[in-house]
Length: 388
Image (tube, rainbow, N blue to C red):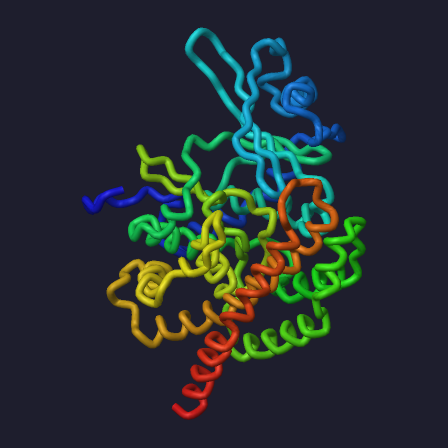
C-alpha cells in the first residue's frame, strides 16, 4: 500500500466507540432480519457446479426480488472459494449491454452445525451490517445465505503483516468489538471448547490407521490442560466483547482503489474474550503452510495494540501495552486448543479431502511448544500486580 500517509476509509466510519455510532449499530436490525426473505430449499453441495447451477439460479430468483422475472440465461455463476467449511459462489446477471449486478451465495458444508451455531450467526449479521461490517444479508435458505457482493480482493497471510494493513485491521477490530448484539453477553469460548472436547473424545473412525492415531490422544490430559488454562486466564479479567473468532486472511477483504477494509464471514462470532480474538488473528500469520514461526514478535504486536487501543497510537501507555500483550499471549494457547479439538470433530464428519487429524496434532503440538512461555508470562504479570 506504500506509505504516502493517506488515511484509510475503513469499513465503519465515525469516531471510534462514539454514542451515535453505537446507537446506529443497535437500532432496527431486528426488524431488518425479520424482513429478510427465507426459503426452505437446499442445494446439494456435493454436486459439481454445473449440476447445482439450476438450483442456485432458482434460489436467487426466489430470494432476490429484482431478479424474480429474469430468464435463467441471464445468470452466470463462478466459484469464489471453496473453504474448509463453506463454498462461496458469485452469481451475476447481465442487465443491458454493459450493466452487471452480483450477489454472493454461501453454501454451508455438511455437518458444520456440529461446530457452528447458525442461529447465533444469523442473529448477529444484521447488527454487524448496521455497524458497517460485512456484506448485507439478502436471503436465507436451508443450507446457506445470499449476501451482497463485496468488490474487493481477499488478503493473503503476508498482507496482514504489512504495517499499514495491520494498523487498519486493529482499528476495525476495535470497532467490531464495540457492536452490541442482543441476548446473553456471557463469553462462549470455554463453553465451546468443553463442548468440542466432549464430542471429540468419543469418536470412532472407520479407517483403521486414523483410529490408531486417534487412540494415541490423551483426552484426560487435554481436559486438565483446558481447565488449568481457563483458571489462569480467568485471573486476567479480560474484557468480554463480541468477537469474530476466525479473523484469518480469507475473512479479510481489501478494495485497493478505495483503500477500504472489510471483515467477512461471522459464522464463529460470539461473545468472547478480547485477547482471544486478537491472539487467534496473530496465529493466522502462520498462513496456509501453518508455519507458527511466523507468529508476530513483540514489536509487531505492540504496533497492532497501539492502533487497537487508541486513535492516537503514539500516546498509548507502556503498561497498557504490557497488559494486552500478556492477555493476548495467554489466549494464544486457547486458540490452539479450540482449533485442535475442532479439527478432531471435522476429521470424523467432514467429506472434504483435508488431513484434519494431522491438523489436530499440529495445533496441539504448538500448544505444548508455547505453553511454558505463555504460562510464565501470565503468572509473572499477575505476580507483579499483586506485589505492585
